[in-house]
Structures are given as structure tokens and as C-alpha cells.
Image (cartoon, rainbow, N blue to C red; front, side, top):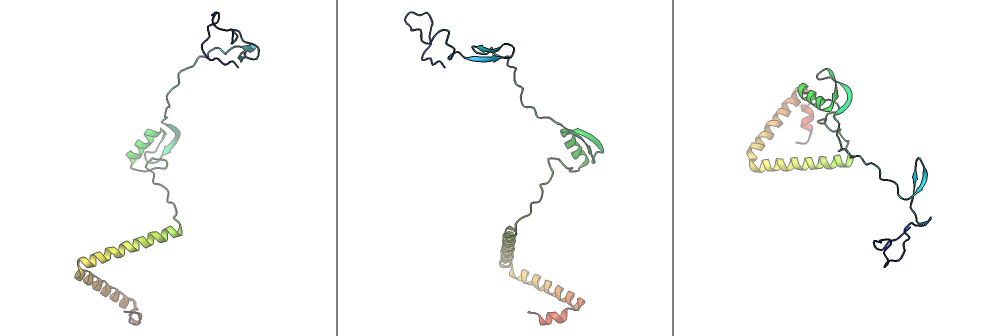
Length: 162
């Protein structure tokens, strides 16, 4: 490998002959030419073609759309068919996400939070208008009492905590 510290003009009397103008066997770069084999020097520049921009295709495998009852092979046409028919089909962008099962501890926390929120809401409603809430509770209790008498469970209610 040849290290050059500055630009050399060969044949200048003020410059030394280092690095050698033609190189030696161990410092000359080599490359492989498919037709002629190993050759000294650098490979000739290859023709570089321009690169195309990234293209997002609209095509898809032809599939039968049940809403419009025909085969479709374009994504845009598929979405238009969904809008036309008013259906959400498998594979559309508007498809709802799958339900992910929650763990038992997370369900318990959510249930506790819901109960706390309901209790706070009931307390706020009672503080806002206690007479109306008491009347609503009494009305619901009467309704339950009538239902219990109809079903023959009134004897159990008398024994229950009041």
C-alpha cells in the first residue's frame, strides 16, 4: 500500500522519486477482470444506472369481495367497494383490533376502579339532592318487594337483614 503525504508531480526535479511512479509488485493495486483475469491497476469505472424512487404498489392477490360480489385485485378499489357496500371486510384498514385478554390482576384493578368511580358518583348525586335519591331508593325497594312476593320469596326477605 502506498501512502502519499501530498500531491506528487513526477518528473519535478525538486521532488524525490518516492513513491515510485510505476509502483512495485507489492504496492500496485490489482483487480480481477472476468475476461482477462488478474490485472494491475484499478478496475475501469462501471456504468451506474440511476436508482428509482421507492414505489408503493396498489396491487394485491385477486380476491372475491362479498359486499359488491366481484373479484378485486386493487387495494384502492377494495376500499371503495367497502365504502360502497357499507361493510368492513377482512383485511381492510378499518378492521377493529383483536381483543387482547387481560390478566386477572389487571381485571381486578379495573373492577376496583369502576366500583370506586360509581361510589363517588352516587355520593355526589346524594349530596346534590338527598331527598330525590332517597325517594328513588325507596321506590326501587318497593318494586323488589312486589317481585319477591310474586315469586314466593317474601318469607325469606323477612328473615334477611333489613
